[in-house]
Amino acid sequence: MSETPFNTNQLRAIIQLAREEDLCEHGDLTSHLLGETRPIQERGKWHVTPRQSGRFCGAAILPLLLETLAPEVTLDWLRPDADHTAATAGEPVALLVGRTCQMLAAERTILNFLQHLSGVATLTHRFVEAIAGTHAKIYDTRKTTPGLRQLEKFAVRCGGGHNHRIGLYDAVLIKDNHLAGIPTGRLAHALFEMLNRIPHLPSKPAFVEVECDDLEQFDQLLKVVGIDVILLDNFSPEDMRGAVALREVRGLRGKVELEASGGVTLDNIRAVAETGVERIAVGAITHSAPILDIGLDAI
Image 1 (cartoon, rainbow, N blue to C red):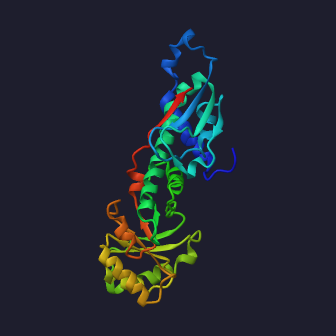
Image 2 (image 1 turned 30 degrees about the horizontal axis):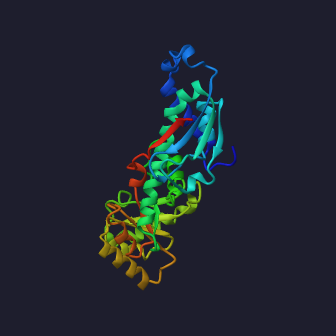
């Protein structure tokens, strides 16, 4: 397999865990019953076909899925750029060829990965389309399925979205719980002290973001040098516009980005984007995405 956007060792471990929870120590009991009806050496061909239109995601991991789950099944054909283009219901995106018994055992696990990731990509793309023409971008969050974060964040990118920090280790996000008990009048001073400790961190953060709950806190954050992004938590569109205007007055456009978060839906995201914020964080694209129905059909 060519270069992938994943840690392949972690991905192999996840796929192996999925295999073990399905086959355990006894394997595929149903396939054992087939006997001469379907000889164990029989070979077959299968199309991977979306049954709903959306955004397919999983082409990049198909070789690794087959390597672990069905090593004698090969990826014979793959639609070019399958992970980054629209998928049409009924149009195959891949052709698999190989041992029938292995595919019968691997089918559901393969589809579990493909359907979930395609669902994340599809929902992400719906949010991206909803704000087309504005300057805002859609970002994911850390509200991901344990163990599947690298895959879900890849699916977000396939849907046209952007990744927020990957984990606690790569960026600084100072939230309300970190600042609990600090009076608003002391907020700027407390943050100056915190950010002065950045050079002593074990690694340089990709960015520094701070959350605020109202315009009074926001005004204090604008006084602090070293903040790259300010998170506007559950702000109304009116207050978001107020924050954008206040940043303009301070001459910080292009220096401090604003990120909207909290209660964002497909129904209201256009209004959020039109306030002038650059980033909109949407946890739902990973934690609440429905699957995209995909079939693995013998041909």
